[in-house]
Length: 185
Ligand SMILES: Cc1cc2nc3c(=O)[nH]c(=O)nc-3n(C[C@H](O)[C@H](O)[C@H](O)COP(=O)(O)O)c2cc1C
Image (cartoon, rainbow, N blue to C red):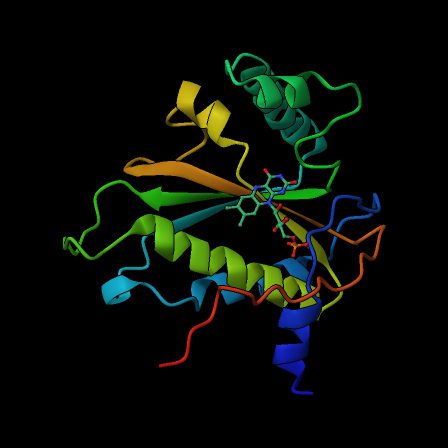
């Protein structure tokens, strides 16, 4: 099977990481993949903050858990308060993905959310292809609702985070669930 397709089919979210951080060149490869993602009108409306300082990551994690615990949504509150739960699963690297608030090339068809999501998917696949694990983290939204400019450069808003590191688990590939999802005309 083609290597790219195999990576796509075998990639899984990783929720357990070894303590040693990926090498700088590995992180550069992952970031380069992000920068080559497609974007509407070629706007490239993204910004990536690479967090490698354990204290900074722990603070981000604790703030997110506190926001979850105060979200007013029973399931999210329970998760935020659960003993031992870590939003980033103690990953040695977390990448914060921010999107431009107002796209320079204005157009109703443009979406920083879509473009940043494409960049995240590229990072996940590039990381998987070099033996690293990732988990896309959307729960950070509960923190961003409270702190809408959290770590974002001027003109950008925080959207998602990506946990990244050497996998300490190897979940098997997901079964394909095609029923009702594909129609040929
Ligand atoms: C937009 C988005 C947000 C996500 N947020 C989280 C999250 O906050 N925490 C988490 O553990 N997984 C999160 N995930 C990972 C999904 O749970 C995971 O991709 C899904 O269950 C499929 O499993 P797989 O990635 O192993 O194929 C998120 C995925 C996406 C695409």
